[in-house]
Length: 250
Image 1 (cartoon, rainbow, N blue to C red):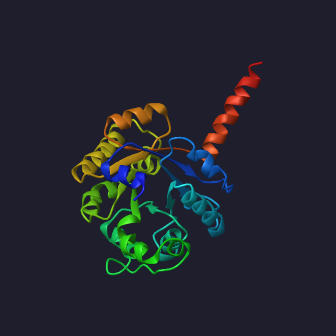
Image 2: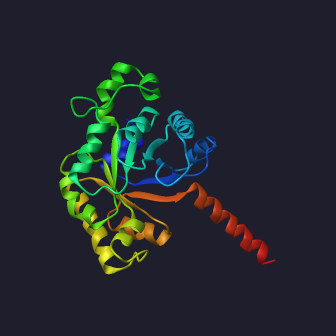
Image 3: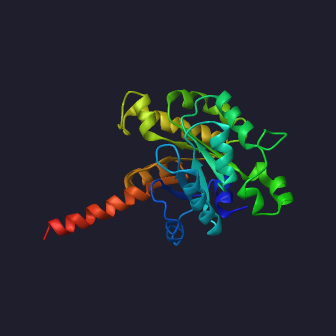
């Protein structure tokens, strides 16, 4: 069991970032030199194909970086293949109901808890007997709360005992509430605090995609232990803009 999984289950501080555009696998060990606990490999909004994802996941495995794949949708082809290529878990966007979560469980768990098939790199690289015995407990399901419908059904979803952690998607949540990008609106704040309360009641890790130091510090103080921040493209642009500011000030 990885240190990240232990931290997740013990609700300790976790820091993760998103890899969404760069296909160069050397990025992974470079990021691993610092505190990074996990990476989310983006398949919902970007251009990655399966071969590019496989190379990144294999490098994450070799450097012992916990890897989650944010899938584009709930479906056997997306979820099962991401795990077969070496993902430690899946991040489920836009989930809103217990029925959707049950579908996810059915896809990612081996029988008798589900109908996941056996195959691919992930089953070949380790001892198969050990892999099969530990698989259902080691492969992680993270869910994203991105609507009020998700907030309202979260307690029921968490009661299944299958969710390893909850992450708020602030942009989609605020858009769904009719207050796009207003992360200090009282209704948005109330909704996020309700997510924290529900996760506390189930003793589960929770977090949010956080864009600023102020947000990171505030929500950590409010009880969030998953700090998911930054992306490969975002960090590249931040560095580029800082360099431009220096040159333009000469």
